[in-house]
Amino acid sequence: MQLSCIRILGPLGLFGCLAAATAFANERSFMGIEVGAPAPSECPTERSAYGPDRYSYSEGKAPCWSKIGGTPDGRGLTSNGVTTVQMWINSDSRPHGTSMPYAEIADGKVESVSVETTGFADQDSILSALTKKYGKPTLLEREPVQTGVGAKFDRIHASWKKPDLNVEFFGMLGSVTEGNISVRTDAGKSRFEEQYGKEKSF
Image (tube, rainbow, N blue to C red; front, side):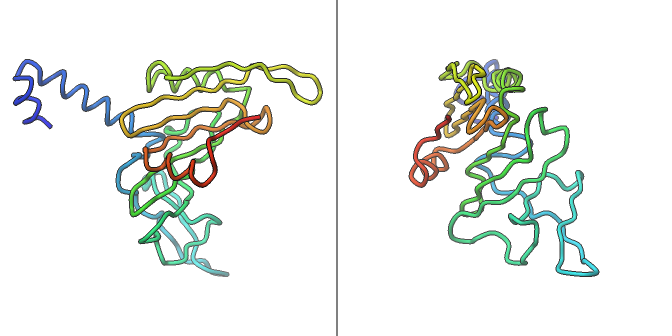
């Protein structure tokens, strides 16, 4: 990167080029997980006195992934195809109003990270945090919705399009206490839409 910056922009343009490269790298890091990069290691395991091995979670080892269901099987990731895993991250990488994320790993690379949010209560603060990280949304909608008991809310839907990176935020999904953030590579987004169709909310 440094050599190409100097060759194209000259020494005076190097700092701007490196700053752009740093910003690009920061955008691809979501909750401490590098989207589009090789997957982190499987979380450490430990012997259980009364059953099968179990995962041993430690902030010093995060981020790491574990099998859905929480029981290691010794087979690791699928070598040919897509594996959905639970991601374990450091506590300071998880903003208020979010749960532990999941990831889809294809051929050893993280193609998608998704995380549930607490819905209406934190949708504005989460939108603010995402805007601080990714800039002005490519799309921003505030749609009035009404629950079955007559309560009215503005539902936020925002998305950001970056080079090989697609960020989607639904402030509310099936209820006012449930939202979602997804961060996907282009390949991850195409695979998701092929399997499930475009993401929708209520």
